[in-house]
Amino acid sequence: MGDLIPLLGDGLLTTDGDYHRRARKLMLPAFHREQLAASTSIMFEESERALADWRDGMRLNLYTWARRLALRVAMRALFGFDPDRGGRDRSMAEDFEETLGYWGKDYVIQMLRGPGSPWRAMNRSRARLDGVLFEEIARRRASGERGVDILSLLMDAEDEDGSRLSDQELRDQVMTLLFAGHDTATSTVTFLFYELARNPDELAPLLDETAATDDFMAGMPRLDMALDETLRLYPPAWIGPRRSIEPFELCGVHVPGGVFVNYCSWASHRLPDVFGEPSAFRPDRFTPEAKAELPKGAYVPFGGGSRTCIGMRFGQLEVKAIAAQVLRRFTLDLEDPGLRPSIRQMPTLSPRGGLPVIVRARA
Image 1 (cartoon, rainbow, N blue to C red):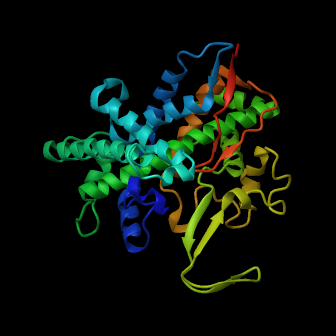
Image 2: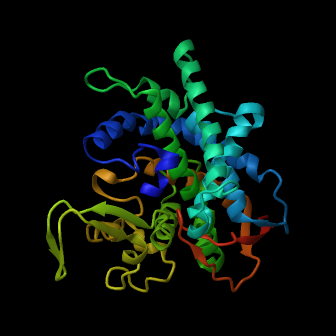
């Protein structure tokens, strides 16, 4: 994750050991059920807004649409900013998109450092982001103003000894959450509807379920299963960088201590002896009974152990809220029914060129 340090600093993705454990413990309350319920209302409102101009027969790039929507959700839920307000709030969203775009470029382009290079542009937009965030943190500390956003909760989070996150720590952690949540939700929504378009038999139970309930928190088991299967096939964080502590042997391979050992869920989620017909989209793999039978570590779209994604539930609820709102009113056809998207693998999985679809209004 070292390549991400210029943007994320010392956030949960780029730290380890005692510091990581302390920061994670301080941040956990921001993802408790009560806070998630408040965030869900934002997800619902923003999904409704994003669907307001959809019409039968219109064509759109679903990836681009979902990316804009996920950014608006993140801006409101993480920072309490309103992208419609203009000024600072809107410019922050634009600067973040420009900053994140650097990691979507070819690696050779990322290596350039001279005047006019993407590296220089990324650092300029990141500096503007930092200016807005530090100004907002200082304003809230001085005024005591708090909202229902995650930044407000983190500002008041205390360790056992009464210590709190510093301004720099707050900046690094919320930037990490913005980075980790924005791209992952975007790609998961996109790949979910890609697979549903290719597997129309899976649509009927989802349509019945989303018409019957609004309970994103506990209900919608069929949508949960479809989401799990999407994350199996297209885990956004498709590789996990680790370092061995001691020498060990795995499947006859000797690994020394102190070396990089990466796991790749893109590969492990497609092992045929664990997941039969691994390339097929089969949500029934994730009934409660089938899920309980999976070997430990076989399914890790959000990592595992002490590194399990802290925003896992937030991300799952966001995708479900968006998907349910779409399913209630529309179906999506692939503009090219034979499309097999090229997968871009940095920094998270996404379809290269997006996903062109045709919107069909449901009766």
